[in-house]
Image 1 (cartoon, rainbow, N blue to C red):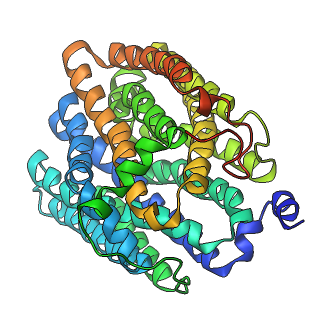
Image 2 (tube, one colour):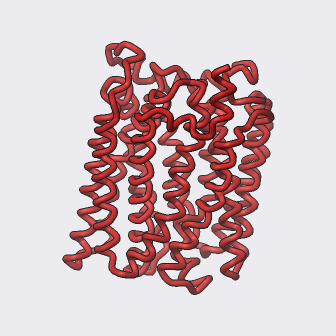
Image 3 (cartoon, rainbow, N blue to C red):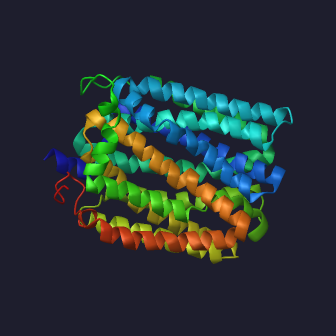
Length: 416
């Protein structure tokens, strides 16, 4: 009876005060991250005029997650996740302050910015596993799919409002944009600290090589989780076009900073529409197939965006891109949360965050370097075609994942 009630209550997760605080903190910090992303991307391209530097922005944020992968998940499993998230947000606010100082002093140039983004990457490396592991501890299992949908809605709402706000704030002055991001990051830390400590669910184990590698072993043995994570890795690695949006906004579509903000917001508009729909009407059948269809549509939308030279078509393509991505994200995150035991959740999420970082930041590096060599438009089109190919290949490689039916429990398909 309780599961049915949770399914019918689109605000089920918010009945829990801890989750409401968590949601608010994630929204503010995601909003601030989007402001920083838009501002740094535009300012870097404005200063250098070089697509390669846009790719390096992603690379310097990804490398810390890769180098710290054996540490961050273990920390999230052994120590207070609320404290870890709060400390990370304070460090992120310091990074925003650093960008503010570089701009005020006229010192904004690639390598000082990359140094700050590297620190920002360290913060994200520790925060990712902690925040992904904290969320499932704040709601009962029957409300978890609802919480996943609202988590995605929080990020996507920030992805809509943040880039637009970032473009407008940057138009007023980059210092205003970075100052706003600083305030939101700090406020997010305060909200996280206010979350009541969840009850301990598992006992800490001594740290050794076996415990550190537990996340890798679990993912390797659980084909559903392996397939879902790796699908996202290769699909977005090939299809990512976010890093090149300053080029499309300025050179292809002849828009200014506000236009860049609009382009960056468009995927979020499509995604939040789907996320809100899923919060009210969760996927009940054919979840695995829906995820693969979403990835294929993501690739198609990427190709359409690359081919377009008209602003409204580009925006529509990006809205479709965000909507289709939301389908796959919703299924993947729910499966990961439900199929992962809490005692290894932090370590599994650490690996997952590296995969996400590889697909996003490393995908931006792929796009930037390819655009530097052959141009932005071919880089986007080839990447979109590659994403479609990945969806087709992975559907054949992971039939168990494709046949997952529902997201209520890990019984929609046999394990292994």
